[in-house]
Each structure stands twice: as structure tokens, then as C-alpha cells.
Amino acid sequence: FIRGMAASGRALTMWRLCAGSGSGSGMLLAARAVPVRRLHAASKVSAPAEVLRGKRMAVLGAGKMAEAIISGLLDSGAAQTSQLIATDKNEEKINRMREEYKIEVSMENDAVARDVDVVLAAVKPQHLDGVLAEIKDSIKPSTLFISIVAGVKMSHMQAALGIPKIIRTMPNTPACIGKSMTVWTCQPDLPDQDRKLTQSILRSFGDEIYVSEELSVDMATALSGTGPAYYFMVMEAMIDAGVHIGFPREVARQLVLKTMEGSVALALHSGKHPAYLRNDITSPGGTSAAALYEAEKGNLRTVITNSVWAAYRRSLELGGADPRVGPGQYKTQAPVQADLQALLQAALKSSKK
Image (tube, rainbow, N blue to C red; front, side, top):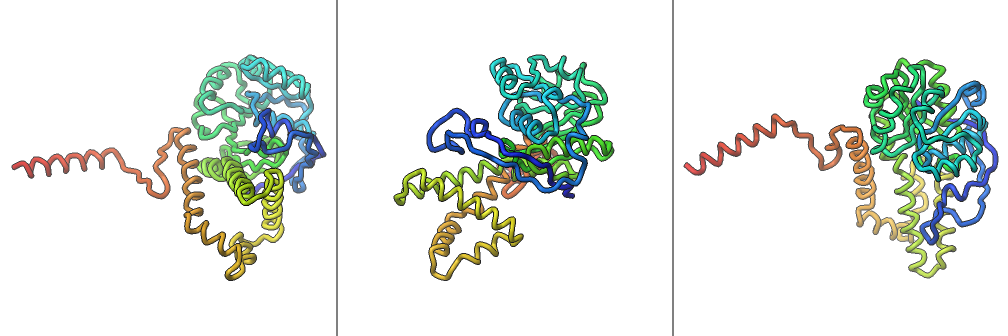
């Protein structure tokens, strides 16, 4: 199930990419250069440079995820600047990409798709069909097409492009510091060399897990793809609570973020179930017990679970699948609905008589 997690890295400065241009308490990183080191496990496949040698790759889109992927490919050594080309309809975005990463850029998706070995689609779901239509006549049958677009199924992309090699992935935003958790899948008959190529690309900006069932990518979209949003909301709430009880905001922020970082590190290091770790620090009649009582009384578990289910349903909906799954959702077939309607009408007629 798990293909491995890999790729080496070096220190880099990327605060601007993650923090954006805004200001205030909502910023994830402080407005200063932050040294970040990519921490990956040892590779189980060939080094990225060996797999990508002699190939060219186009990244369609110039948003945050596209930039994170390009940065990861270059920083890890998986690709050289001459191997990458980025496209976008926004001239300002692609010009900035060219200046920042010294790569080729274009506003013409169809021309670019003709001359590369790998195409990675990093656009919004509502824009993907337009992009597919734009490149369908120029993309080569041998091209490996990788999508990070939420919800859209491989069969849809394959039908639109008419090529056999389609990869569907779901990374997350920590890719911008080389810490993405990416789940991916492909057709069972995809050649091994294309699987290794995909792994090398994904490992350049974090860890990856291969799943054999495409539905698992929708599930991952809800859990890991959307996951950072849940954690950021918890961080925000705890920081605000810290301010409420009297801490300066920056102190509260540091306490919350370092506590979360340490808790995750402990869970990874110990390998123990979170419930065990939680029980281990919950003394009878203590502060943790009092806090957890309020969390349980407020249905925190149910809120989190329902949030994950809501994201899963939305992912299914984006792909045209029936989103009526999970707690409180019922799939009712149209014939059954028609039968119920007929029975109700018959009952009404009978009551009138």
C-alpha cells in the first residue's frame, strides 16, 4: 500500500511563498526569512535526477501549489531549470515565476503540451475542462499527465485527452516547505518507469502514498488534502483563547504552534495511538480532564468527523459522483422515489373517498 517516503533536501528560505502578502494574526509565518530544511526519509527508488534526466515537464497553473511543486523539483535536484516550463493566463504571475525560478514560461497551454514529456495540471477544478480542451489536440500519446485537481476522476481526464497515462494526486499546502503528504493513484497497467517518475516528482516536495483505488484519493482529499485547514482553525482558536486569558498574541502563537509541533513529533516518535498519549497526560481531577470534558460536551469529535465527511462529499460532487454518503445521508434511487410518490398519491385518493 505504501510505496515509501523519500528525497533529500537542503536548507532554503521560503517564508513569502507560505505567508502570502497579507498581515495580521492570520499569517502562518512571521514576515521574515525563515530557514527551512526538508526532512525526508531515505529513498527507496533511484535518485530523482536519474529518473528525470532528459525529460521536460510543464506545470499548468502558477498558483501556490504550482509554485511549491516547481520549487520542490528544483531544490531537491529532481529537475533543472531547463527541464521546467510554467503556464498561466495571468501574465504577471508567470513573469514572476520566470524571475524567481529562472524557468521558461508561457501563456499558451497547447503549444507547451506539444513539447514536453510530463504535464502537471495545477489549476482550479472549474478551470480544468477548459485546459483539457486546449491541449487535447497537441498533447502526445506518450505524455504522462499528472493532476492535482480535487475531485476530477481519471476516466474524465482520459476521455477528454485521449491518452493512456493519467495520474491523479492529492497533495496539501505544506508542500511549500517540502512537507506535503500526497496520495496518488493510476491505472493498474501504468509502466513501472512512469510510476517511478511520478514518485520522484511527488517526493521532491514531501512524502507520498500510493493507493490502488481511486476513491481513496477522494477520501484523502477530505482527510489530508483539506487537513491543514482543520489544524489551522484549531491553532487559531487556541491562540485566541490564549489572548483571552491574558497572553500577548505573539506569545500565545508561539506556545500553540510549538505545542502542536511537539505533540505531532511525539506521536510520530512513539508510534502510540493518540488516545493512549491523551490518557497519559490526563490526571484525575486535573486541568486536562476539565478541558477534555468541555470538548466532549461540545461534541468536538462529531464536529471534526462531520467536517471530514463534508469535504469528502464535496470531492465526490466535484467529480460528478453521488455525494450522499456518510452519517445522515441516504442514497435513494429514482425508481424508489417514484414508487413512494405513487403510493402517497394512492393513499390521498383513498382518503378522499
